[in-house]
Length: 489
Ligand code: NAD
Image (cartoon, rainbow, N blue to C red; front, side, top):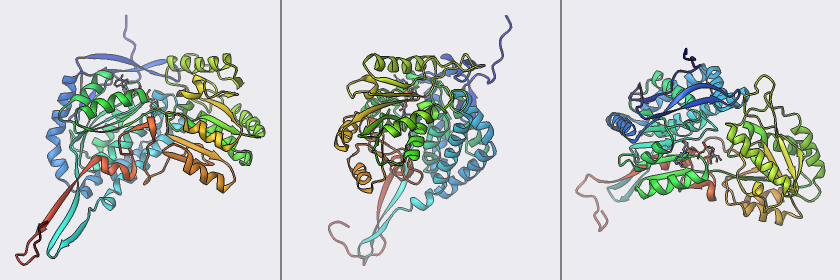
């Protein structure tokens, strides 16, 4: 039988600036928009990881020895290449992940913003100097950590690799990137563009794979730091394993974001922001609205929210979810909530998009009278589904939000400054929105949650990430014999 040619050729590894095959396993890659197979991806072994690490080790001395001002020159060029290839990069994101082309453009644009932060790093990494005794100086410098790893999820195939690559590399590290095996194509394209921008071979290596390669990363003695973004279950596994192997680790996990809505909220602003937050990227965002805590008389806002939700059309302004398994899992949450007494106001189950019958679509879903004990109220659904939990007053709303094990984002919709300020204090989450449904901190502010949404001390982007990707060297200097000497210097 004649072999069917795939739209994208087999996805290999990228090591030392070359595409390298794997002798291990491989799996198929599908476009969730249509269900069509578009590529295959190698699932590498620990031996293949070791090849990448040894390659990175060879590249490290020369790369780390450059000044930060020299290293960021590559990222000025990379930023330009992201602009020039914006259409192609967005199309790739949409095809492998299933989000709409508009959302994919936003993702690429965010990659540009992240790169702009990296090129500002010389302004943020000067170190400090102080004359601590007469003629004696202490100074600090930011030095690279060494070989670092970045493990990324399926939901932002372009943005999440760019959360880590520009900063970690500009600060002098060499990296092993392990993208989600469900969306490996954007990561490979990023590696190609960085080569075109002049990045020396071996500084960035992409090793594709699944659990086997993640475990090998956590165990490899020459990898000094591991950043992880994905579900809480795996974040915990990675954080424990990497830490047990004495590596520094920042592991960002899943989310269950609560939006508290008060009766005085601006009707149109609240309804449109909440609908966009729960349905954007088909709800597959760690910043998505998942639970709306409706305080008191907000029926008018719920009614308008339902009207707005009905204008979100699968296959048009709503993309697909990642897989058939994800579609089935999301629909099961809805059905179980309904069976437990919740009322489905807008129902996205059994959605089929004409002409894309093989795609994995769930329509926007709004469910009222969800109670805090239901699975849908507690667990991460990761689909375009909003659960409405009714609360009698704002104190009960904070109790509901605070009882979540997660703590990525929380938001309040109100026109009262006093209540908004209270939410900023009382919500138990790392990123808070006031009248904003997706409160992503923009650069130079850092991104990271609290509670079970993040393990480790650092955020993954912005200023906080500088401390993760560097170690501080402290030098004490005395040149002149007449310099004062005391027991400390
Ligand atoms: P995932 O945890 O299934 O996978 C993430 C990475 O871990 C992938 O590279 C995957 O290959 C690897 N992996 C999967 N199972 C593993 C195992 N048992 N052992 C070792 N490695 C394993 O996550 P996902 O489904 O790709 O992404 C969605 C999740 O990511 C959601 O929970 C979402 O909230 C979360 N996320 C969080 C943030 C954040 O900033 N907190 C950002 C984006 C996504």
